[in-house]
Picture 1: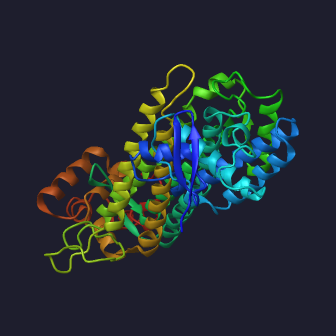
Picture 2: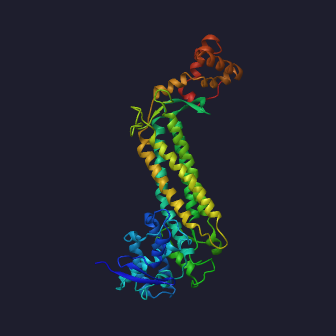
Length: 468
């Protein structure tokens, strides 16, 4: 038979199921914030980071004589268990909430306090022995604990995203090697330009994405700066002397991250510039990824009436009415993911701008936007690689025939016969349908067959050497 317990705060008393490790302030948050339907337990790295922060604080407070050793040790042990995910199902507050993240902070304080109480041999709710505010939240406020945990979680989440993006870039590079000997037409403004290797096209995709790995690294360095010990606004109120430096040192050990204490805790408590930068990096990569997917859709278009230079893996029937139709569904879904991330960047921008005086209360929506963007980008990169890029094949003969029949190859003749003569050939070829070769060599005798063969070798088409 289920039992309950009574908890109180300065607003009154409430009944909670005795199985719940969260407490009255979490309960109030559940009643007040039904926004996304996505609880913080859905971001286990955030829950883990909250546990890291509370453990670091407990160890620092113990070392400074602020917390009794038995209470600090119980809190640290409870944090270890929370960090493993054992109590993720108790972190239920909505990702978007009012109060600058106070409900998230109290959710962590209450769960850790009740786990610590059981470790100490007491019942949940017997807060006289280990209190969510007095002990678990000792020397902290939401305004330093929440952003510090957020930054730790972001750092760890970016590790997985970076690796997935790298693997995708490597897949494009591998295709570049596979397609290195395939001649195709380069295009600008969707018009024939000059020849190139399909391998170079795919290597360029890889290079384009590998640039983003460096930007991720830059962003991680920015979010390594934390404001632990600032407490409410940066004045270190209720924090003992030496605490900010000591808790930062403990957090470096616990997390393995190169965390740095901000030089100006007042500025660090309200500043969200690092989030804006990270969001911009995510948007930049999303834009690049979407452009690449646009190219994949164009290059595979057809199969009879489009470019048809490459084939994407056939994953599912593409129409409920047109038999045999197969759509580029993976590039399409990555496009849509990119659109979301681009929109989330605007959310981060507006939320960062909305800060007032000594605090930005909009950090919960920033955390939601960044967490979801990183998750979605990670999933999109993995899906694009596994379901699309590794299975791409080339239509070599068709791609090369488009080059041979293209008017664009006349550009190779500029140094030999001049721009005006080349333009005349292009104009006649377009008007009559004749080949550039037939007009230049056979009809007009502007160059010999031997010279033509020298100019239009495969290597000279993809790596042009100036010749007259």
